[in-house]
Image 1 (cartoon, rainbow, N blue to C red):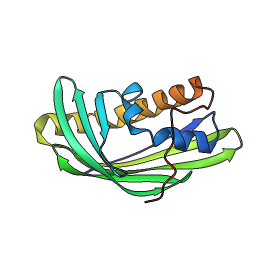
Image 2 (tube, rainbow, N blue to C red):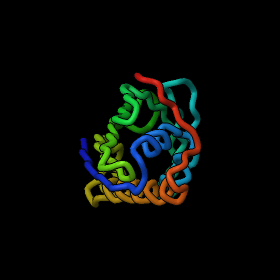
Image 3 (cartoon, rainbow, N blue to C red):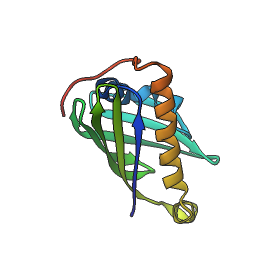
Length: 150
């Protein structure tokens, strides 16, 4: 099991940053390798990914969600085994710190080698950087929001 921790400061209010993060179907716009996400229920998503030509599908369940504070998940079915949490920290009215903690269980030789070489960590860092550009490029406006609690 590999553990990854990354964070980034975003020039947008915590509410906007959190609200955008709840729009899972928009993740392909800033997450490298994510081709499609389908929201199948309030807490269930289906992911289709392709990383370096390796396609995978899996389901993930949101296990905890507190508006403006955190979203936690775990995979429940498919070829990927991971669990994680993203927390949102208000720095001031216009700035938010986003922190990602991810537990990733590499599958097979290619995943294990890629993990040992830091590929998953670099991808997580790049995804956070692209998320920052995505939300800042929208001037803090979001494509939607889900304010429910889990």
